[in-house]
Image (cartoon, helix red, strand yellow):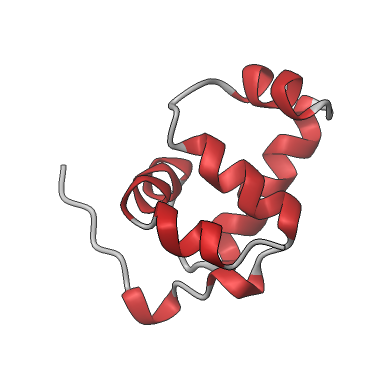
Length: 81
C-alpha cells in the first residue's frame, strides 16, 4: 500500500502537546485502549485526539498518522514543549 503525504501539510507545531504524545504513540501500532491506559486518559479521548491529528496534518487515516509518526519522530519531538 502506497501512502502519499503532503510534506507541506505536516505542521507539527499546529498540534497540542497531548496530540503530539498520541501521534508518537500511534507508531507503536497499539490499539486505542492501550494508548489510553498509557496516557491515563479515556479511549474516547484518544480517538478524538487521533481525529484532530488526521485533520490538522491533512492525512487520510490513523494508519497514515502512524506512518508519519514513525518517519518524522525527531521532527515531532522537536516541536514538543
